[in-house]
Image 1 (tube, rainbow, N blue to C red):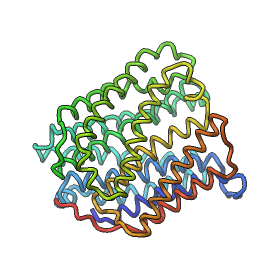
Image 2: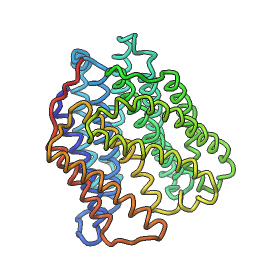
Image 3: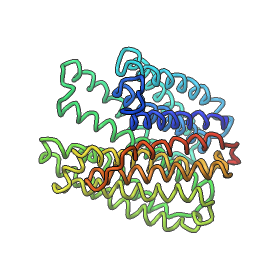
Image 4: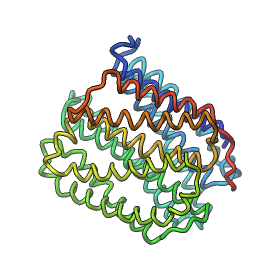
Length: 399
């Protein structure tokens, strides 16, 4: 896999951020596209263009040799996926959900199945990896990704019956999102993280890692109920929601022990990798705590009906947790080089993230209202990503 693929993945992150900034300034920028179409384009490019393509790249370069990558045609998979994502971007921008956007999305899903099957076959040729904690996370992530891919079938059925505004339809949407960013994105990324630690011969407690894995694996399906607590059937799914929330908290205790063990290794890393890694640790921990708090009725309005708070939580999950861990890994593998421009880009990206989160929470709690504040913060993140695109270099990762 060539390092220029990273530049393309970051380009999709830039496009997603640019569209997000356009949404923030929609009222005064006179954007020549429908608002809802841009919302769909923004989310699809973030999920399928940025996160998916970079995860495809990382799992191959971290787990496989160059020979295996060439033999199983992963570069071809990535190239085809990129073309499809471009089609997704254009079609959703122009027509929203329509014939072409659904067609491109369907083809994209077939590409994910191709990746799942190819990678599992590649791993089966490496018996020493089959039962490792990293592969357990990867396989579980793939399973959750497959389950999430079945949900659009149900959405199509409900939509054909005119039930787009029903609780059943919203429940499926929430399930899809949960299985995507709390499921297969997060699990695959954690698998990559543990494999990196193994590759670097970083010592950690493998038993604690196994317990962490099991608590999060057991909780992931019932944790879907945490997204349903704002529905009319809250009382019927409260028990599995509470069990899932508690399991995640226990899992985080073991995760904290693992982080404590590898802290000496982290301390030796460059400050920019540590900056993104710290933000990931903070975001991941806060995300789990917020999910736990959502089971209490007193937080029901903020967790499910306050648009600003909900959006802040989504960004905490997708940017602070998923994207910032990815960027930390890219710095660690030297796919992103450290110089003046990348330092400025990193500062803008992280500062923009924190300022938009603060504004969203402030608005949600009716504490502050800063005109164009969210637009400014989004523009800072967009510029930060652009500067990171300019600064990438070939990895020194050993095979």
